[in-house]
Length: 479
Ligand code: BGP
Image (cartoon, rainbow, N blue to C red):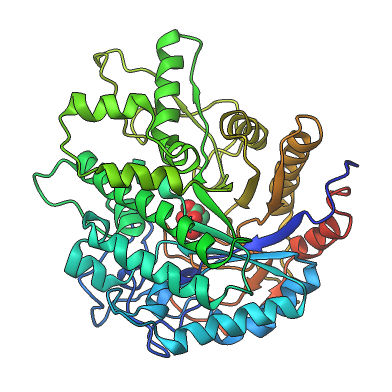
């Protein structure tokens, strides 16, 4: 038990993403999104990306946990836990079903009016991500997603439509969820979900990723500018997956390798916060002879569209080791050369559980960016068991969250880091993004839904629900 005083107004809450909870994938004019063409993973294989929706395949996001229809019941449960904030995203394909229309879909806009009104009824502040792995699928097939500069226009049109509509209902915005995930560019899944494309045979995946990522940081910077022209009080943030990469040993080569890994992971937020590319990266583009479409107007826009806070997800840390056989030209592919850290345990999915890494992360970002930080995802995926009395004894989740909140509070109270809020993943059970499975559960609220789509969709409070309710009631003083 700790007793630390956090600022009044600290945004305790919980997070989800539209495609992982809403379902209703083809209701009220919604178009297909990238998430709607992904099957669930099997025990040994990854999620499959299909060409459109194929008969006979099971697509877990099509129904998800039916939040689209059950949100009044769910928001009421969030209020019962004491949420001050609720992070979700707006499904882009509800607003622009194909992505390239000129006018938004009124029925889609109306849904989020209802949802945000419901939040405000309980004094819950919405925190809204514009793009959380749910690009309209038509933008993939017709334009190659963010391979195309045109997608900047489609994205900013979408941003303008929702900023205008929810001008008085939403204050906190995030542009792209985990924009830096695509550093894992050798995984088809991360490119498809983040940027909406697949790498063609013979292509240099790294170069294609950098081009798409450039268009995304420009789109983000333009969205920031549009936001402030619509409502100067909007707070617009960037959002990165923060996974510290430690050197496996004190060998200077390992230390440098880890530094490179951190640079390659966080150049996205460097650009979004500082408004310019880091020098190592512009040199790298030249050394690799990557002929990228980066215009002077783009660079000017990056400067004008810097963010006001930095949101991040924190689940785990990595460690890396230099490879004896490589030359000095280190690869910047994040997923290569990671090694197991013997000092931290792993979750059932092999994620390295490292609460102190959260304090490290907060200090690292605070030193580098000098902006308020917002922990917009943190949590553990686990197999939960529902008892005959409809209880879930998820002490492992309580332990994980307690240990992480403790480290966040130390960063705030001992190290002086400004943290705006904490919205753990996830407010309620959701479809897991990487596996498409419901059985990898994250929520405080159990949803009776199984991997094969069976289940009543009934909601049950887990032990962690009551624990978190007390954490919020004591403003984090009693964990
Ligand atoms: C982040 C995503 C979320 C979420 C979470 C857990 O990468 O922003 O959408 O799902 O990770 O990952 P997973 O669902 O794959 O276990």
